[in-house]
Image (tube, rainbow, N blue to C red; front, side, top):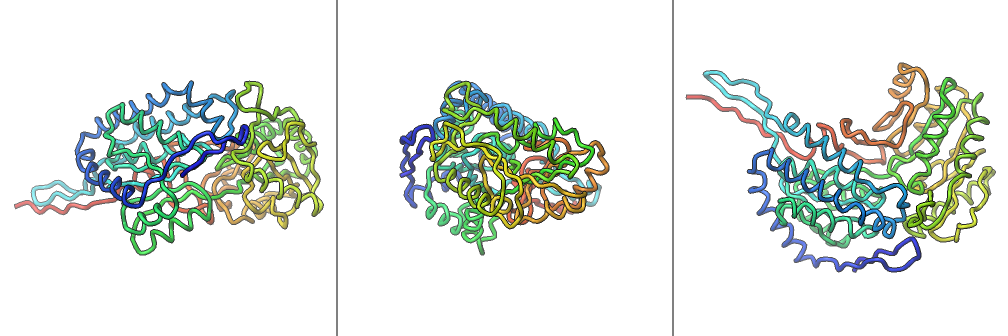
Length: 455
């Protein structure tokens, strides 16, 4: 049984029964049988049905926003995720014809030679709770458009999301067996992967979860896409706009209670601007209102689960015990559980877990650096590599620094954003593969070559 414990008050918000191993296997078999007919539909037909499903999700937004607050704690004032959800799906729909087009090598009197992109078959999407609609649509939309069937397993913290998506897409003409939302336990999920039930598996979540997916897939030759942990750095150069840098980087560290895949978790500031930057950062965080996410005045809601908040508290306490300076007093609304005060730390080092382990909460450590070389060394001193944010007035300088950063995406003068035209990818313990962009379609299909000798 899956139980969603609401971070608002600790009550049980929703329960769902997981499928048995046999029922899960049957669901995948139905998807496999339905996929060929779906793939045979004209591409424009698949696109129109998927985008109608996206629009149907948007029509539910007034109900979705408070539902998300109950499930994972994001304040209702921010209006949900439909903007990004729609942007990503629409972009992937727009590029589908070109991304999936045949590559013609020759069409002469003697030969027709070409490469087609064909769907894997059934794609398993294992989605996280922190941005449950946007992270799911990254794969669901292009997988369906490319002609795959999709089995969606959503996080136990956000069980209603997959149901809403499936209902919306079914109402828009995507067959029920082509897009299925399922509730599975870890053992059943691993068993399906090990049994070669899927042509491709896309997982967004923890490093431990990614390792479990890889272990299950070992020897099956099933393709996997993994977006795992992050410890994303920001670097404020000596020529940066300090006001813009502080506003964006601190928002990137604290928005959604710090529970963002590409949230900023470490900031390095050129020494001459360090004190001024910290002053700005502290003022921003002190202005936040921690509270019930259903209250429109709340700017910082609870973390999705009390155990997540306890990990952040532990990292902060250990850092302070080792000499870090905490700049934010405990908020009155901090209950010692899911409601957690945001924190800015200085006098931190990379010996501290708060600068090394993923925090995934409203805390950021800030360090001064002498030059670009020191900043680059510190940014790369991490097991993770998802994004990095460089703040400078010099594009060439930003690109040169970016060339040296071990990361999947380099931002200049922005942070915490997913551009659907660019490949969403990571390196090191952040995982493997890539979503969105034309590369997303390449990962959700396989190349098939035709060498046709004419009579």
